[in-house]
Length: 94
Image (tube, rainbow, N blue to C red; front, side, top):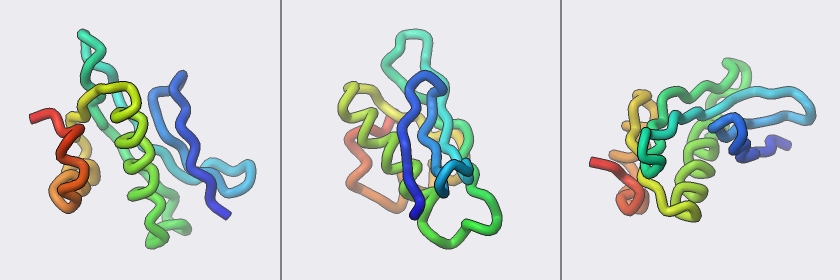
């Protein structure tokens, strides 16, 4: 079973299959601390097609809501997710 875990100290959400890391969605924090710049999403080839990237990004969206920060999608995957999911509009930094 794939586990998604938020790792605040590493500025990312990560996906694990048991102990094996299989993906991540990373962000940088703006100078004022109010914006997360999502700059990279990756899932190992053998795990693609299982909605893992979507789950990684969704985890960051939920954490951003909890922390009252906005997300600026920089990586192409994050941009597409923001476009596809209007329910994420509340955390989008224009």
